[in-house]
Length: 142
Image (cartoon, rainbow, N blue to C red; front, side, top):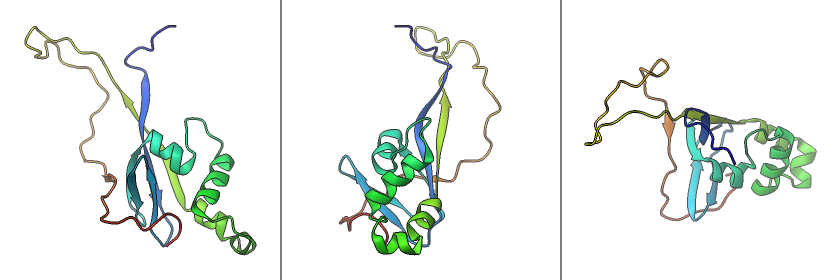
């Protein structure tokens, strides 16, 4: 099997923005994930797959069914009022792509040659990691 070059873009995290008027909460691997209103939260791809059914190339309709079922948004009442679609459509999910590149280092581990990279970001991204909760209250709509 051929090994991928190190400079091939890789997805390690996924950015989730909850544009609903309520906080969305869930768990993955014992870790609670909180998605507050209108805040970007970076989550590992494994958590994004578990919570949102996300994976590279996923069909958004497949994700819709997964999220609505997982969050309990597929009840007859919610479907009748069309809230199930409104809630899902208010969640933006996008991959965060990284490019790892090899660098030359000397025997001390110091960089020998400058790394050629694309333009560097001048501002920090506005991402928040998962928040620790004292007690988890459950998933779904608040």
